[in-house]
Image (cartoon, rainbow, N blue to C red; front, side, top):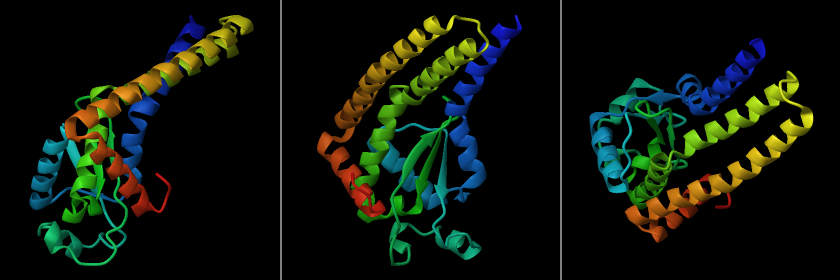
Length: 210
């Protein structure tokens, strides 16, 4: 009984760590702020173009965006932002269904980056619609549950090891198919060239290879 409870608890903890952990970590350790009215309107437009539906939006502050003056300046639209290096563009959706939060960097709102923003948001929309994060969480939970069963001798080592190999190969194959489906949805929504160009330009802004 205790062994079954331990294996089940391991699976649940692993699932929550993958599904909810990044959301909790982002809220606690990243410099975030709520969007201004102008930013909220612009993000609504960009999300509408990309087909992304979330429950909340949070903006990651730039290196010098932590003061009240910066927050007040954010009331103006992207055209009113000061010049200089806008910084890298980053987009991520975290959290479980009905609690999904869109995290974006301030540079995403620059009008010069509109095509990049729409392409990246469409890619995130594809992952949300195909339940990509939930699949990853289930795969990790399954692997750790089998490991817990092996450690507690709930299953023989040979059978447990064979199960790990089977789960790993299946998760890899299905995961690739889910990612392909997510990419296809993004391409259908805004165009494949637009999505590919968005990833290339975003990588260039980060100074990494796409």
